[in-house]
Image (cartoon, rainbow, N blue to C red):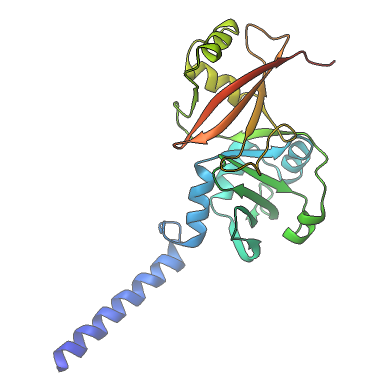
Length: 235
């Protein structure tokens, strides 16, 4: 019996040291089961958006670019007590060290079955966000998963023919065009059930006099384009 308790103490000591190493030295980054890392893993599988009106000033103020913003968010602190963690529409409160080596803050909004994360700067709390009315209509894409097969077109002959008329003959070309475009808040319907509707816009290389609006859903961890419409730009 004495040897059993001795082994149990050794086990407890080893377990305790492991926790100290995990939390103290590695700062939980190596633990995919930790709540913060699970949220960040979910974010990293999605397209990252920032309101077009806010992106430039937010980046300038905090000395950021797309790559630096992505890297710094990986080490951001998430305040779960200040976040909306339950329900279909989740909002996380993030604090991180910016390019000036100072504290920066933003919110990150995600909807179940959606493939976008909407990063919201200049809003200090979820409570303020609820009272805030969106003024901008579009967002920049600031990060996308490294997956060359992320986007694909529906097999409909009409969709395929429409893409060919725009000079887009493969899903890889479609993905490049879409990710170089923007996101339309007003045309998208993220409250739609069972799957949110996302609308992106872009100018095809060989038809630069039109905007193409691509309507998409998230299906099997990929972006499925199932409708295309064209609109002449306003100058």
